[in-house]
Length: 106
Image 1 (tube, rainbow, N blue to C red):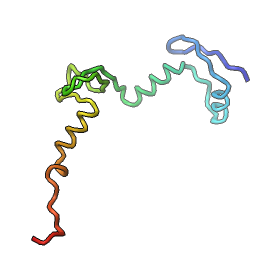
Image 2: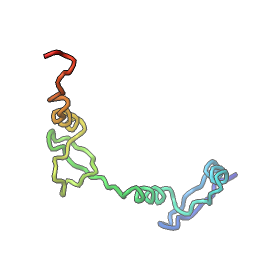
Image 3: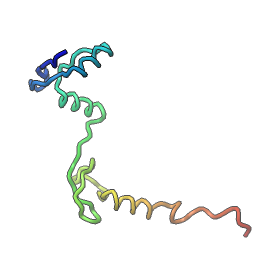
Image 4: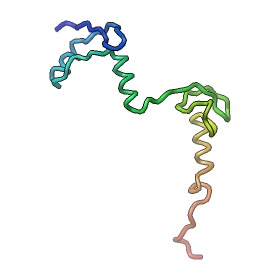
């Protein structure tokens, strides 16, 4: 079976529906896609809540990071993974103030 060239119904870009994809669609009894892979991915992301990513700098070390928090409107510091992990451990009451040992007689 040869690849089918389709025109995206949304952006009018041409895309291929390869043999393996055609077989999968036929097995699942699904129609041939009317949108290109990029437009289909954008639609799936919108269904998940349309998250947007921003470039920012870690508030602690200044490292360049990508985050889902808008640096212009964020009310809390934006931290890189390493600084967030350190902050999380420092603020964890179970680590800093563990429960007393109840097995030891007093």
